[in-house]
Length: 96
Image 1 (cartoon, rainbow, N blue to C red):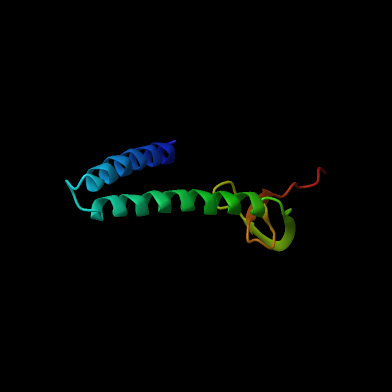
Image 2: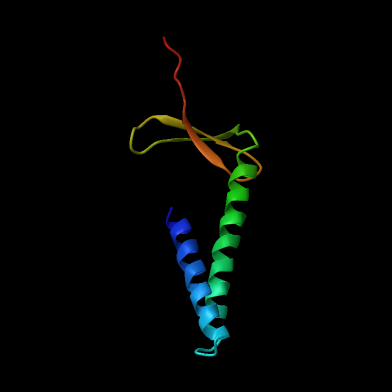
C-alpha cells in the first residue's frame, strides 16, 4: 500500500516537474531525478515479487539438521530447498 502511494506521489511530481521544465520555468534535473526514483520503485516491485513466486514453487525437504528450540525446549528439524528457503518443524515424539 505504501509502495502504491509512493508510485502515485512520484508520478504526480514527475508530471508537474516535467510540465514546469517544458515551459522553461525550471531545469530538467528534478524531473529526471523523480523519473529515476519512480523507475527504481517499479523495478524493485517487479524484481522481488518474481522471487517470492519462483522460490515457493520448490517443495521443502527434511534435512539431517536438528536442534532443541531454546524457547520451547522441544526438538526441531530443519527443512529446506535448493532456493535456500528454510522452515523449522517441531518434531513429533511418538506416543508411548
